[in-house]
Length: 351
Image 1 (cartoon, rainbow, N blue to C red):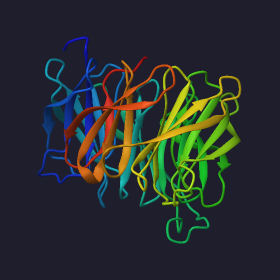
Image 2: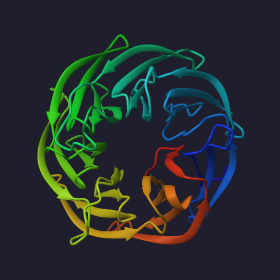
Image 3: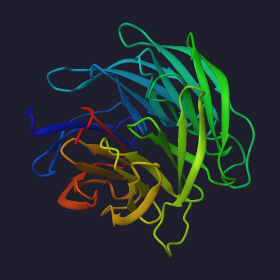
Image 4: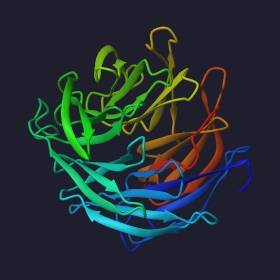
């Protein structure tokens, strides 16, 4: 593979009898994308994760009887070969991540309201090690009638596991002790916010959460020693005058730490924010159409590209990031992929 090309995988909302996980390439000169190969046998591969050695890929199957899949990655072709699959003992798993040391996979089950941990064996196989059931509700009777964990991930130092629970308006800290998730601390968001996804500033000082239900972004001071967050700012994820759609989705900070992007599915847009280098606070700059419908997920790539997965228009659109101000410009290249909902860069991006 050329140094001018980056690989990525796309997860989709497709049936098990259809091609579901797509390996794709991104030309770092132009933003052109191509499908390299694809994998069937998994339904609704809505979130993907890869180990540090890039030889194992893990995926959730977001179905009523949820499952987690483990694949080996062919070092020459990037093709996926199934190693293991395990039930999550719940429904609608929508997020998967690995611990910093690569020892465990963690899964958030949206509908059944619980979080799993699995120990990863030497050959990539999965052994269930923990299951934590959340309980409670919040003020939105339609969407917060019960717990709905929407993401699970470790802090940058690998000390704590954090869970954004949309149904409880909580970001919950756990410790992972010998494979068991142990309760540590809970941070409350604004009532009815619906915390969904999260990202960390490369300095380690701040964290940023996107709230689906009230279409906001929250800035937190991050204390990795104590395992705590302090709310510093809450800012709209929508442009001024836009109608709230309870559809904010994904959030990412650039590796340089200067820019933050947030996607919104009601506006079919991605917002750009400048990050104050002294305080971590956000200033809204602009919103750009994703040139598609329902941008559930997006990713930032080396060379200064952003790829947006438009679920309901079945395409992935590439944008060039202006390295001076972070503004997005469409490259003109669009990749047709059935109902893409997750983009996983193979290489860690730097620009």
